[in-house]
Image (cartoon, rainbow, N blue to C red; front, side):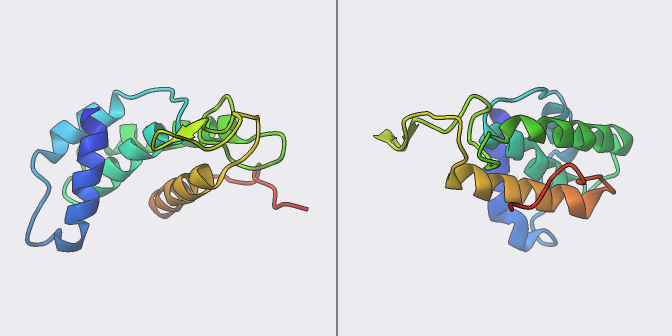
Length: 139
């Protein structure tokens, strides 16, 4: 959960990176890189945001971060559902959102995942040269 909190703080401080550098960027990189396979889009995105912000201050573990990003691209496929939409969970759409029933937890895409994964893909694409050819536009 440390990376989830760090993601929120890095997002808030992003507008003032020059005057408010991220404290302990190397430690945050270590924690973010320790996160492996994920089954929820938020936990997919959080370390990417933290790494994006921390790497603006240091080149620490840069090669491992590139490997981590490429691994995340491979994991992205797990969120694609039969309707070609992205789902919040690898098992299907999120049942509850903010403690309110949102779906029937079907294997279908949902707007929350589309938003979160668009953010993640944007950060990944701007950082490294990755192959997204497997993503086909809707017909």
